Image (cartoon, rainbow, N blue to C red; front, side, top):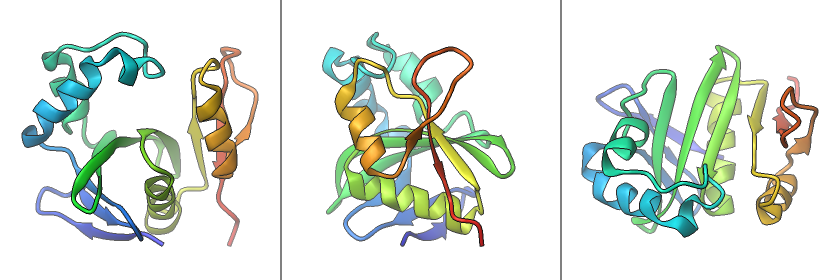
Length: 158
């Protein structure tokens, strides 16, 4: 289960068993700009490398409070990026490139501390590995308005 601690800027650092998710900051911009400039990294994340300016606007927390961006750390080493966004007060979606334990930590926070009922992800159809990984994490394919893959995770009702 994730242990969330509120930071001074109103964001939450999430602590999992093997990983920690920390809100992204301007200090992470070089790392994130390198990742998002790599064709391999963005192959299943929009397909187009992003400029440093685009990364600064989208991935270092400037879209709060609607979108919360996190750097995923394992033993203090960055191992991925995660974000969640609100559709309304009780549901939203997550986007991430990370190890499975970070996914479990993020879901525990969303379903536990925030009380969400449902989370969706929209992996690229051609990214078969991601679709399988989401299915293994408990996500199920559901119909989408666009015909593109949409998977959801529903938290058990209490």
